[in-house]
Length: 337
Image 1: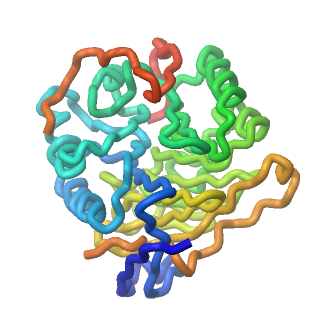
Image 2: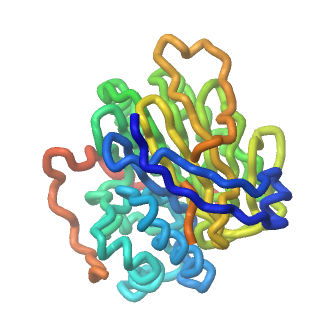
């Protein structure tokens, strides 16, 4: 199938070489049709110059890689959450995307008020956990990992069982596998979620919370990413038994492109450098018992080159094709800061 390819000569940085990614020219299938392109940011909402610098790279990339929507891994707002805060920490840095009506789908972090679910531009439709299908064969599930109660778990199992999707992709704040020294794996959350992930064939799990990038070795056939460096970085905090690739010397975001049974991914720094890339092959249902294979560095995954007013009114009920939502949890968050 004919593809439109984009090219960039990637210059070596000391931080890039430190994680074993050599300077190289990368390309990615970037077709005008039949693929799904999206981006990921996590722990972004500082409102400081670091967030703005990365946001500039992030929004500039759209001209070369037109992602259809953005997933947010939580900690979308640090500190206050007034109208002014939403403008400073979200609308202004990501203004080009907002102007282009690129939807952001948020999950809640431990620094976030549950009231963010009412903010129109986070597309949560008043719910703390929800699911949406941007195209046939691909479904995303946003969870509230601050408080995983029985109601949310029952909702998740019901939605997974009924999804019928080829790609099942989870995103939430607290990682159930992590090599971070400050937080590490949330094993209690893992005990609750992993059985459902395995039972219903979840393919990819995205999280934040840790202020670095980590691609973990596949766990029981599932691919895990941590992307929590869009506004904060915790240097020297990552590395251990789960790590396949990591980056903690700068800020970053991620881009993905799903092409049939292949998912191309790339992590990009605030210096517009690719710090990790690869391709994930989706498992078939009858391949559940097969050993997992780490995502190999891709010879061909997309390199970077190079306001609306805040609403606090509850959104209207979702229409056909909008996210399917579950009842919001109301208990106080119990996750560690």
